[in-house]
Length: 200
Image (tube, rainbow, N blue to C red; front, side, top):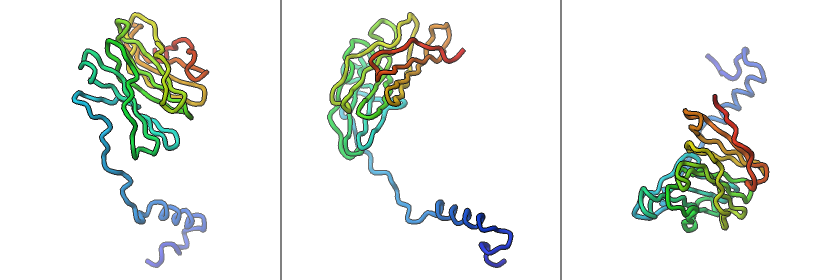
């Protein structure tokens, strides 16, 4: 009985911790932080996202996806769009790839004004990892850069940028079964080191 906070078994530090927990977790005036959905694509064919399809820096939000609008399942391309006001409004769709085959499963990362995208692509007759970047928050884009060169398939890439360092991992079956491979750039994607096998 009595006042729980005045219980003699509670020391001063314990009372302070208890009050801190109450302040942190007591739901005072909590309101939903989610706004209504915003449709980002509007074409008659499928537009699909993959893992790590959105990235942001300050108020700029960057989205990538793969899209069937250019010829259905035999010609899938990577598209991009951006918002400069925290997702309130969005710019036009920007087509990032233009190859006769399938460009799919993009991954995006942002650091400062640099936007980095990787995906896998069939333009070379088998699946290879490709990369491109923007240095001005998605306004202009570099040419495609092929990152992998092996006769097996390289697919499902993921990218992360931190300063000048760009890190890419992907699945690869060059060793007769699927293994995880890694490579990095130390100069914001201008040049790339050799592939490193991470799993054995």
